[in-house]
Length: 88
Image (cartoon, rainbow, N blue to C red; front, side):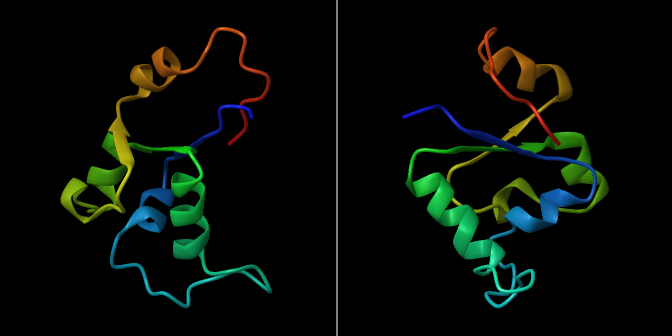
């Protein structure tokens, strides 16, 4: 019942690519593509750093559905003032 946000920056924007291999995963976790799609489908907010996406050559048109590209300052405007946790 809480608002959840994932912010992909530095090298991480590639993880939100729509054409990410379906079998890319860590250890025995589900594939990254599946986890992010499930997160968004469950109401989670997925943000990608626009500058980082440009540097890693990830086109906005190639991001999974529901991903929002934001600038550095824009992310903090979208988070509530009383956010409980912010970790990256």
